[in-house]
Length: 297
Ligand SMILES: C[S@@+](CC[C@H](N)C(=O)[O-])C[C@H]1O[C@@H](n2cnc3c(N)ncnc32)[C@H](O)[C@@H]1O
Image (tube, rainbow, N blue to C red):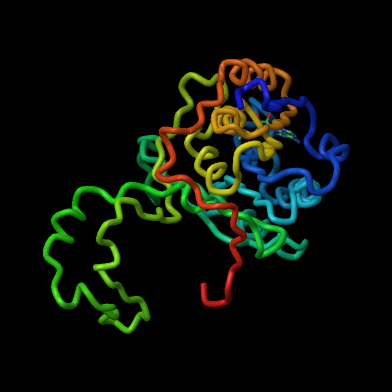
């Protein structure tokens, strides 16, 4: 497959009516970062924090309709400070999404390695954002091997001389129920990551004030889709999700209400090629597997 076989489409408009023309169950993954309440009013309008859930939910209903039953919705969002405290609109949004039929499966944290410097009298620098994972069912597709990470050189020294305890399951000393058998790590060079993603921001050269780094959608695209699947970003901005999708050999539809941002992302997509993702994957992903969540997870 080469890039010309992929569909990459940018649609200019309000994502809610635009998605109204899409068929049910056609998208494998939605990754997006909507306008945050009242932020960047000058560049693309703002929604009052108290009205945020009301504004977002009709759009989320469309996302639910177009997402395939085993698909995933990743929502990058962070509540702002209003009147000296964190506003609760993201918490209220999660509760409303659950009421409207979404499963709130997981919360990933994007740790911004290079967050803005600054000093406030009552808080520290904000160095993280939420990436909320929602699903239509608990039976969603996930390719965990596609995001494995190298275990690092420490394992060579640690695993050279195993003690007797290392060879059996060593139960937690604090009765947490967790235990480990270090000998299980022998011969392994790759491990599964955690739900914290340590990534630097990269706004500089994208002509959009609120971009996320390509590595962020790229990580979720690898985790939740395979080649040729369809990725949607309904608040596409400069097209970062599209760049990641095309680079990884996925089809992509981006929607943005702002014409200039649509032109930006069209230009960026034209410059992006499918690279077969050789520099990302630790191992060949295992065959397509449904991850069923069990009550003890
Ligand atoms: C936080 S930015 C997204 C940035 C994007 N992740 C990137 O890396 O460039 C949110 C975008 O949503 C767009 N937007 C706001 N309301 C919209 C709507 N109703 N439908 C579609 N796009 C909208 C804005 O124009 C803005 O570009």
